[in-house]
Structure formats: structure tokens, C-alpha cells
Length: 275
Image 1: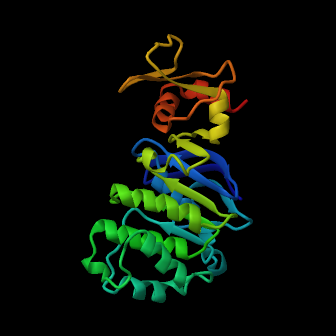
Image 2: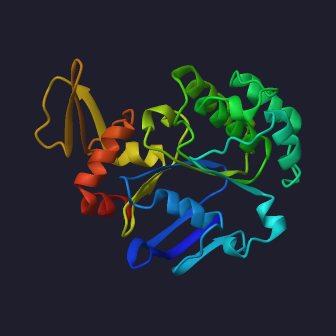
């Protein structure tokens, strides 16, 4: 488990995160959502130990990530949105750098590369951005770490590759993994991320599983306007509306509508989900 308590961080005198508190449990694929500039990437780098918190603490199974103990680092991987085109074949990169992760599996790297339709014999400097991104995704999954942090992993992927990415994540991650994926592309990941974290600079607005969200909010897809809806958006064929679930009806959670609802009703959402 990762326990984050009263976390704060600033760039110079500009505060990026303040009073961030939440727990990340094993066996979950968390989706990290938030507006531009709220600190999603900063949070990922703090959790992975690349930055030191200004205030508060991060405890990962008794370890302080910033101390960067080699044995601890070998069980986590941070996939940045920015990927480097190293001057070697993808397979050579995997062989050379995989040795830093004790559970690295070269066969799995090749399997994921095949799923993503990417050539491990190709030089990384000759790859397109999408091919390069897929190489690093394959490498991240092949590391077999308990803790996996991904920043916008579907950026640069075409539509078929996004489906392949979802398949690879579901098939090749450990059952005890804590996976945290930051994304703006919620439609790319809505079938695999659960719970959902919605971040604001000052606090975590929401950290809840899909079942709990469906229990407390109702997502209505119809032509009939609900005057009490917290959020309404016109879509082809009618409206999508989000309201308080007062009748215990089940509905399919729409992440884009959820995100907009949370940002328009921050205090109400915190009250509902913190009871």
C-alpha cells in the first residue's frame, strides 16, 4: 500500500500540491485525472522518489521513495510521457537496461512488443513517436514491478494501439500491483481504470471505485431533461445527465461526465463521498 499524508510541493514559491492525502491499495489500476497544471505529473514523480516532498509524507510499504533504496527501486517503474530515442535496437535496450529490475522478463518484453505490433529489432532512433512509446510500454510491463506509474501512456498511440495497450495492461501486470495512470484521454482507459482519482491543487476531490460512484451518482442517457441534474451535456440522440442516485438504480459511469460534475460541484462531491 502507498500512504500519502498531507503532501505538499512547490516550484520555487509557486505551490503545485497542498494537503494531498490518500491511500493506494494493492491489486488496483488507479486512473489519475485532473485539469492541466494541477500537479498530476508532479505527484507521480513524488511517489516514485524523483522529487522530495516539501511537506507531508509518502510511505510505500514502509519505504520512503525519496531515499531511493536499490532494492525498493527495482520493484517500481515510472513511465514518463516524454520518452527518449536511444541509439540502439529496442531488444538491445531491453537487454541492457532490464538488468536493473530483478524481475525483468525479456520474453514478456517480446510478447508485449508483438501485441503492440512493434518490431524489437528496430533502432529506437528510427522509430516514430508512437512506436517509441510502445517500446517503453513493453519495457515497463516486462519489468514485473509491484508499483507501476504511467504518465499519459496512450499519448501518441493510434486507435488500434490503444486497444492493444489495454489488453497488455490487463494481461501482463501482477495481481498485487499498485498501478497509477495519469491521463487526459479518459475514453482510452475507462474500461480498465478503477478506482478513479480526481485531483485538485489543494486536495483530492475524489478517490472512489466505479461501484461506489455508481451507487452515489446516477448517469442518465435520455431525451427527457432532469431538472435536478448536477451536470447535463447534449450528445447524439439526447443528453447525458448526472444526478444524485436517490433510487439505488445502477447506471454506466461516464468518466468525462463524472469529471465535469466533480469540478462543478467540488464541495458537494467531497461531502457525498467522504461520509
